[in-house]
Image (spheres, rainbow, N blue to C red):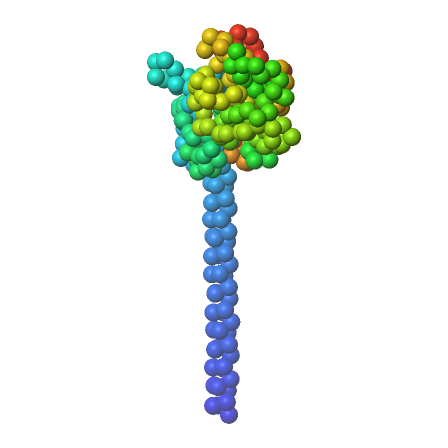
Length: 293
């Protein structure tokens, strides 16, 4: 009997010990869970603070703190090499002023025009700002508000007997590779099928070909044509009939709205204080800008 009582007492003590042990483990787990939860909350708050402290503008992956503008250096008056060997032009002047207002280092980055998408997607450049036609490309880039209106036109020699697009039948017409003029003519097959169209890397080459009589006409931007005609002594003329009309805008990588918004904010300041108008008058003789109007 005494042995049975002792056995029962030992069993009770063991049960109490096991229960106490389980209670101790649960308490430890609960304390650990509380500590982990507190740490997670602290980490979330820290991440939130870092995010709120981040700049409102994002830039290309390799160009933080800079504003790298991709442009065709053979595209006067928008972007080209000046007589002093420095990059200059209407668009580059605007872009540099935007960079200054955003507190960024301005970098003019010449690119091959037919490689512009690769340059943009790789982060080598932050935007394409070079008489860039947004018409027909709206779904391919994040575009700024348009800042200039433009037409695609035909340029011929002053002495040419070509007076209208009908006279282009059987002629040779040059375009810049991957340009808006080339795209417009590829769409207007009724017109382009009447002549031979050939592409060249840049408009300077095309103007020299036209001047030498190697081609009969050039399809190009009217803004660029007007500058070329003025700078070359009016030995060329523009046909009255246009190929297409369009708008110039700044092209950013699809989805980079933060950079687009920041640039537009600086441009709006420039429109408000007269900088846009003054720059246009310097390059074109009058204010032909459309931004903010």
